Length: 176
Image 1 (tube, rainbow, N blue to C red):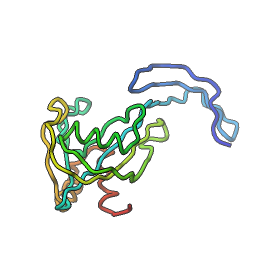
Image 2: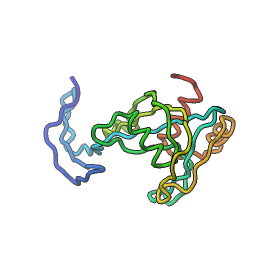
Image 3: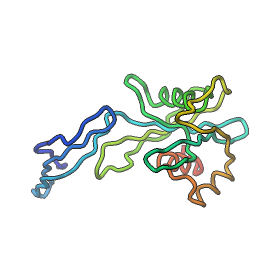
Image 4: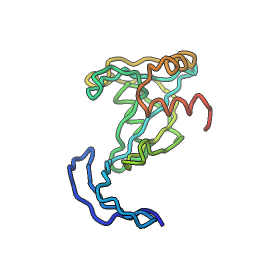
C-alpha cells in the first residue's frame, strides 16, 4: 500500500508552481495532517550539446533567486504538447542561438521527491551551428567547455545548478 491523500488545502497556485497542504494516510495507519507538497505543473529539460571537438555548450545565466551569475547547460520548462527532446531543441536555440540535431532522451528523475513532484529530463544533442542570437535577458554569454575544464569546474564547486550537475555527471560517467 502506498501513502494516500485524504484531503488537500490549497495554499498557493500559479502556472509555475503550486503549494498544497495535504492530509496523508501512511501504510502503517499513521496520518500526517500537514504534509506540504510543491506541485510543478510542467516538467523541465536540460540539454547536453556536444560539438565535433567533444566540447559541451554552456550558458552564463542570470539567477535572481540566488543573486548570482551561474555556468549551466541550456535548460527550461517543457511546454504543452512538447516532448523533452522537442523542448531541449527549443531551449538550446533560445538560450544559445545554436541549432542542434535530433535530441536523444537520456534520463528522467525527481530532484526532491520527498516534497515535490518536479520532474527533470536530460537529453543529448550535437550542435549544427549558430543560427541566431540568444536571449540577453536570460543569458550573459555562451561558450564551449572541454571535458577537462568541466571536471575542474565540478571539483571547484563552480557548477551550482542541480539539473546541470546531474546531466554533466551522467555525461562524464558515459552511462548512456
